[in-house]
Length: 39
Image (cartoon, rainbow, N blue to C red):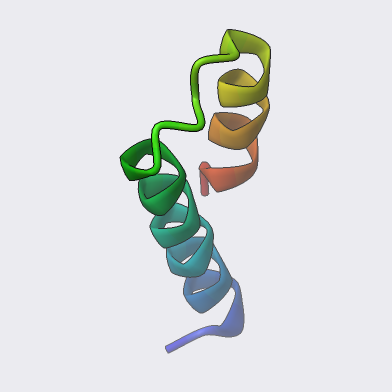
């Protein structure tokens, strides 16, 4: 598995955890996290 893909998957997992914790009330913060989590 390429390192870049592994990093991308880690970002997606972090983003999913972030949503589950309910920390995405701030839409700007959510947008920033989405842009980071996208491959």
